[in-house]
Image (cartoon, rainbow, N blue to C red; front, side, top):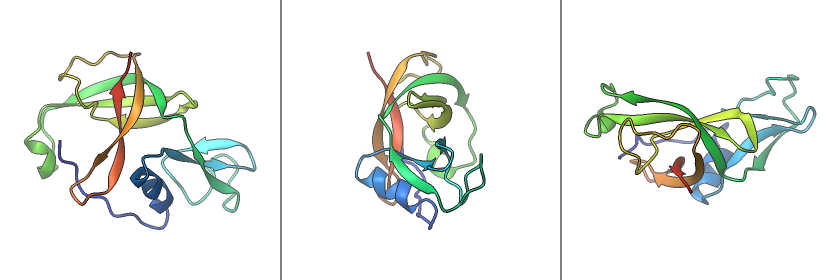
Length: 136
């Protein structure tokens, strides 16, 4: 599935640079020891902006839920319709949720609760982004 190209900005550059190295990092506030995603300029818990760092994750999670996209307005994805859009909870912190197309999983055959691991796929402009595949 071809994905829309992504251009890093100041906030997302560390996340996307790590993805290009096939590493999954999440913002972490060292003041209150809280992970947050998507990245933000300040901690959503304590409001601190100068205590944010990037913390490497295990790359493992579970499928929380999913939906099937039948009619997307994103032109690059229209040829691949219908496709899964799953919510992944990270094992490192179930409060962190990410989305995935679940490459290799047939449409509407998503094993909710199954273990997944991160993989990295290229977008239209070559930027790698995290996706998830079912394991076990």
